[in-house]
Length: 530
Ligand code: NAD
Image 1 (cartoon, rainbow, N blue to C red):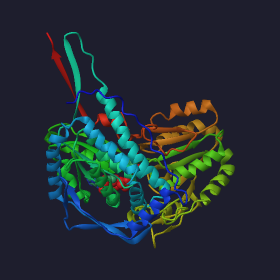
Image 2 (image 1 turned 60 degrees about the vertical axis):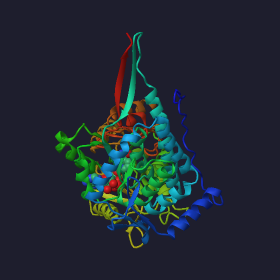
Image 3 (image 1 turned 135 degrees about the vertical axis):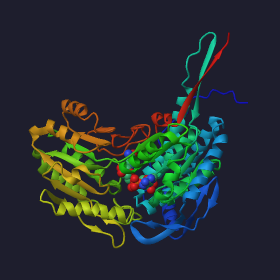
Image 4 (image 1 turned 90 degrees about the horizontal axis):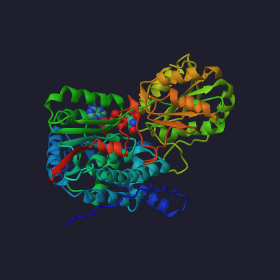
């Protein structure tokens, strides 16, 4: 008998642990790293709970030591993509009718496991295969991952609690149905938490999923799948299919039962998926919901009244944490000439402190970039700047892939506000700075607003409150996450719902009620009493 009307599900952010030398968390992490580096994991495709080894395999490498292979995964093809859709549709029948408390409790249990017995394992996998430092891994693969799971549970309860009024002789209620069909979740390499949330958010709302992880993050993705399984997720609710996108995309995107795409990655890939859906729009049983959080070219604008020390420190953190491979990373800055000399000294001092290397050495601030393709792409931008008369490299600029895909934190100074590296997303440790005359501040707001096609994050540094208000208004449509006097990165679930507009995505704010609403199709039920 279920006749409970439950109280609000309380939410609190997971505490970030410090990993001080000798602490229990540090010892556990060191031992997990050791074990993972010295073992080999074979990762199958998982459909309807069944492991499938296709024999078509790819390696899991360590980006900061790329000759070291710690696993391999089997690739799904067209056949497995079809099987995954069938498994998702079959599991849907029972999953969507399971009382919601049971669905939610599985994900809350997954959060408990992630922050408890799975903590070291998730961190170690993210450090090794995505080259994150222990700090970056902890805030991602443990804290943000658990926050997404718990906050989604709290938001879902809030949504379900929202009911219409009834009158004397009519009772009204809303049933928050999941979508009919299956959801295609496609995750990026750079956040284990996002990889977990892309299949996790729609499935907590009763949907079933075909999930394709990014090729360079299959290892941590597989652990996330196993975590859900240990927490009690029934077979077929999430189907895990690592694959070359060209082998499976059309089969999935053109299937008549596609009810939604939950994507995070580059703008161009999302545009491509949208185009395919558009071309097939008359073939679907419903209108697929398209949710995509995509690229960015995030700005920092300093006003002459800015606190120079805070600006320099936060600019360096915002640009170079996780090698600039955060969608929110600061990658272009506008600084007034009057403060530049002072600011430059501070910046160089801050960036000179950065140690780049193997992330298992806990004193390193930066690891390697994700893979050879990304290394070559970032290097090309740096070479372009080196060879341009409009730019000068004022720090870094060296790249070395002999052992790992290492790129120095690099600062470019340009005299051209439309310089290539002021406009295009590089997704690496490269910050470009343009200097302006103090009296041009208002023009600079306009210039920053219209230089790139993206609208993800941005910051303004000023001590003058009138300036902050002016900038906030002038930059309204330039960033879905806008920051005053701090860096444009580091959004926390429940505190800064995250997502951008323009070509940075559909801005459905990952980890929020807005996002969950996209995976729900409400049915209003009316009963007339007399
Ligand atoms: P990516 O676009 O290369 O890949 C993302 C995913 O899409 C991967 O799983 C990839 O295999 C898959 N994919 C590639 N081509 C596809 C196709 N034709 N059809 C279907 N799937 C395809 O991105 P990435 O390199 O993994 O991640 C970096 C990008 O993600 C950056 O642009 C970054 O800004 C963005 N990002 C955005 C956010 C955000 O919240 N806005 C968060 C993280 C990353």
